Length: 153
Image (cartoon, rainbow, N blue to C red; front, side, top):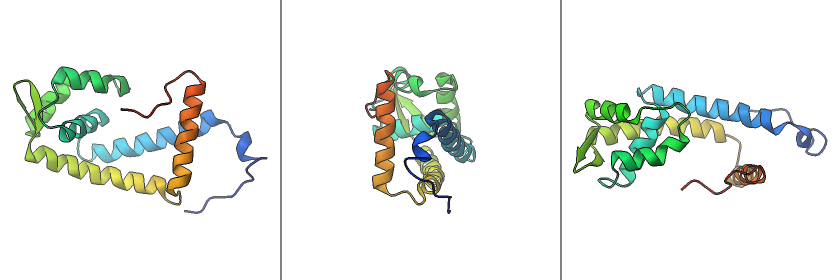
């Protein structure tokens, strides 16, 4: 995709960061949520599947909910989410620890592939150096405004 070029100092540096960050967030999050919806998943479903897949049998419901809830802007009922994944046959629980089933891992991989398409479209024409500089600038903005500029754990 080709976009119009502007001068760095006179035009781009004068742009309102709030507008551009809100617009980017709206489009990125919307694109990811739409991709996940094709698999009948929400972002909290996605986060849950990835966390469990990365450490099978180590997450309890309570620990995983505590980890994910701060990132959730949809006020998800995580107990209902765990029930949904269990009903689908994607999640099992033994001794209070969560593990994905083969079907759950297959669903997670399908969702990953859908998300990867959104990420590829978002990064089109943006090399790693420019992307990293953008992330670092946003981290500094967050920290300057009193937020946590560290990368999420």
